[in-house]
Length: 159
Image (cartoon, rainbow, N blue to C red; front, side, top):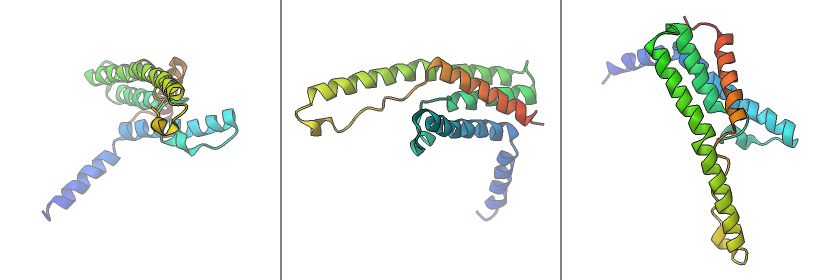
């Protein structure tokens, strides 16, 4: 077991040297922080919860996968199978964010409204509300996409 520690540290060093990974993670963190400033501008109050919740402007999921795909293209090549895989992955994530999760949020909003109306007289039955802000509008996804690409281009080619 003693021999495993240097090997583990070597892997950690390799991970920390992976510029594509670091740029993609930076893109999602920047998108989350931007949500805080957008929330402040729109609602004139600081809401720290937006730093750890899904949904909102811009889509941090879209920023993450866009930066990832762009970084792979910059590093390995735009015609590589790796870029193709990263791009297909990005499309699936963005479609899910704007499609499936957005629909689930709308359904949660309707179900919460039904519960509010049904249990007006007995509010203790209505304590557990469904999370309504799950997905993104297409604009939020597009802004996240543009942000991820821009961050990856700004960070420059990975190698």
